[in-house]
Length: 51
Image (cartoon, rainbow, N blue to C red):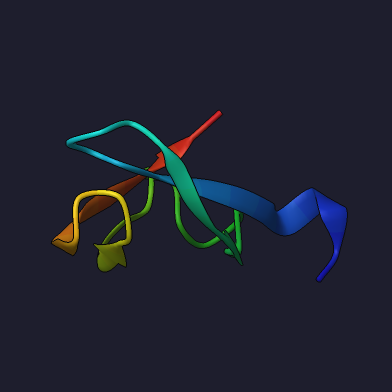
């Protein structure tokens, strides 16, 4: 993964950073939001792009 496209995904409930992923910043202008599993909440929650 290249560093310039690397983003962090944080849980919307507990605010912990659980995942790292990439995105094309030229094509996707909005912040990325995915439904992922959070091991601290122990359920699938919405994960938003964090700084």
